[in-house]
Length: 308
Image (cartoon, rainbow, N blue to C red; front, side, top):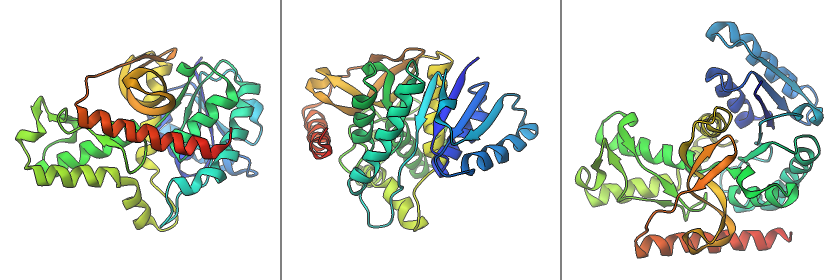
């Protein structure tokens, strides 16, 4: 029986649990939070919706971290969200301690699990989880590329007035302002976007994608995106739990791929029952390589600030 655990019962964690139920990803879903009764209340609310769309599994909440035992996948969403005017980097030291604490609990109670980190700044926080758990690199993954690519695809579809289902595009690199939305590979049912939109419009879409999270923060005033991030991480968990071998962009530890080592960056991978089953290396243009190297440098700067 597949078990999915989510640490953090805030907006993103609750969104993860909801989408996991809707997509019937696991027979058991556990929501964990240190705030007394928060996870219990959120889980009970979700459980009461199960008759309405036919989820037959078990969903429950607790403050007891031992509940994550025997999980196939553990998702870390715990951490402070961004506020208006706050960069992801501003969250570094606050969320480092939170993610470190979560990773210690995972190492203690769910040593065979695959870990997906959502907390920001993403590429630094997944590094924290990797170092603390000491799990193999294929079992510690960051969620960013699925979200950033979804935003990119939506903005392209919106500009062309076509179905987002027919848009394929990917975003590589760091989960931040230096991310790399690849223009030459973006297409609508195989038709290159460069043949459908003027250069100025594409540049506008690329910029909006890079700052897509910040745009939502500016509207919400006291929080950040949660619906699409929740679904994005569940897409990853589903591919692992159901061994679907999906090709998704995830933040993974690089050891020479793309001529980069020692950092977590978003690149296309195959996700299956063993976590990251393969890192897909695509041939990049010189300017794309340069952009990816800048992402790696930015990530390395954050890692140095972690003092780990």
